[in-house]
Image (tube, rainbow, N blue to C red):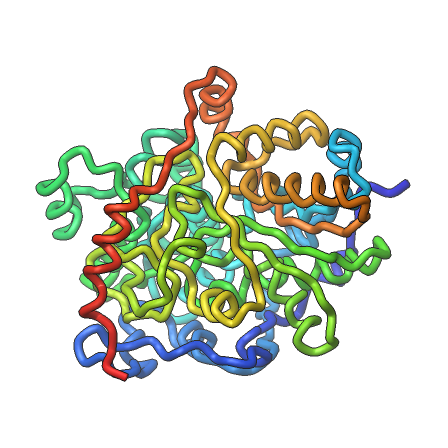
Length: 454
């Protein structure tokens, strides 16, 4: 009776998979914030190396992974795929539950898959330092690691509420050599503006992105790096799903449903896109479920509009499901999911009905996390508990219907730096947070003026 499915090192993917090649409807183009016209790649060169810009706009199905990057991936990849027999037994379900364990990476999550690649391309372009943002700290930890490998300086703007909630994430980034600042900070014009308007601001990913972009744009030796949302970031993460396809074949059970947490899209896309490729090219009928926090429900309650990826309006306008770039999500512990918008690729797939989205309450997610911990012995990050909550919902439905479906989910990271959150939950201090409907409405209304004339 097998519990773990491990591929040999030779099976590390040699190419990133680009779902743009297979999408029936390609995403609408990003627009210049001033002219409202499609942007040209050269406008991105102050922030990104040319190779990443080419990947951002590419429609090639497969893009070769540099050997230097694959050699670093070999430190932890291929990551194992496990069958969660303990959870199946606990739920008394006929469902077969599998999970891809991305928490075994040096930074403890799926984020190094793109952090290493981005650091490599930036180093090759002659950049000396990278500025970035981070929510819960998973991305900041990963980029700090990637920069350390290639001798780059790293400056991280960490959403203030997570900076205070997760001090060991900050220390982890420091050990990799990064400088970490709570956002909003007094180091940028935009940060100072936010602090003047709201001295007690808990921050948001949108605000932290604006600060990091401002820092990169003002330094000729610096570039900006993003941990989710953009096409090239999602592209890099597809090594997860490519490995999982082979591992599910090894297990003898192709998934009926694929589930992953959703913040900006990299977590979900990394696992789902290679399986969506099977739907598009081989006629498979796999379901895909993106799971977001109910306090930040852009997929389930947001609108499909052009919006900025950051709060200051420095980025191009992107076609996305959004709550509006002014929306500041509630201070839940799943900091990596507190983002107002969604990547354009995932947004288009949701709009076209190829994927589904659900929202989960914080307390329900932590309860699901405890079930997983006590049955499987792995402590998941708060972000990953969102997937687990939906997995449990699906498994219970299988029990009620008497149907043994195959469920695959992304255990996107471990939660060993999140024990304070688990303690709060077990002590009854962690409560559900309802979305601020008025704030969402006002934020969405404010971006109506940004929409291009059609």
